[in-house]
Length: 428
Image 1: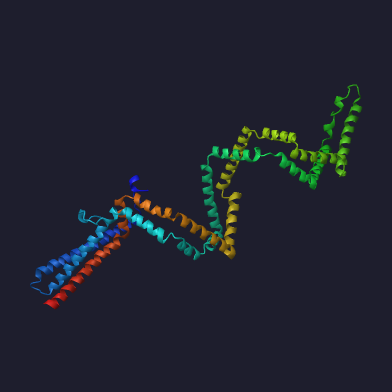
Image 2: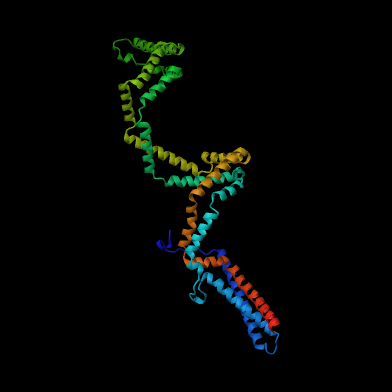
């Protein structure tokens, strides 16, 4: 994204470290300027008195060379960041005028030299990623921290999801997997397998036991069950006898079903279930009735209501568990992370598998997206304001560059002295 489509933005806010760098830069600028002034004073003094004291000519030559070196290096350092003395001399103010080119060059350098598959693979293969991660995760406090951070992210995702969209998805899934497919044939096949295996007999036993227990606990429920339908002129003793007879026959019938594995009732149930399983698979009328009953249960309003209730319940429960550090979900997550960390720290085979997977994934991502990753540098530098970018870079490296000015002063002085001494010695 070029600067032409977006207004420049500040490189960053000034930090305490920037303020400290600014003080250091200002101090070194003062030192370098002081060295230039000192050379100028020496030059003026030696130039004025060299006729009376010939030896001062050497001092004058050293001071003259020092001034030249100081001024030349001041020009070179200043030209990096701005026009010297505000004069638009060509090839000065290099950083602000070529900011975008510098950003592109830096992005290309990072892309070609750092974001290469072989470089990333070599570095990762030298790093025991899984072992270090395992040692770190095996500490319960670290596992709790990861679980807490994951809970925060998961809660944010849950709150960001649109309830209506989630309900629509659940409704579509329910319709696709519950309503549209036919239930009859697969249910009939499943029921047939249960009958063939005799697995239904346990359910029949349970039903018989349940009925027997109910009968034993609810004798009074049979009072008047039959007798109230008899003629009123019958004696009450006869009426009670009829009710007791019905109750006793029911108890005997259930007891016989419990005791006899081949009881006629059991045979009838087996036959009914066998016919039902076959009809659910092959009888269009039975299949149609079953599908109609299914549609009546899962009609559209009920499906949407079910989806809304399911999502609301699940979301509320998850948010509550994620927010509570003592919830079972958080505790199990932390325990699982600790266990995974312990395995990663001790299982060499697992370490190799994880390291290989991480390395291959990283190399794939770098090879596929390295241009996009490097473009972050280019795009970011292009969006920076030139003046603030220049100031930021000068704060970073300007103090060291002032040493160039100071060194130029000293080297210039020594060079001037050496040149004058050699010329004086050779030419007189």
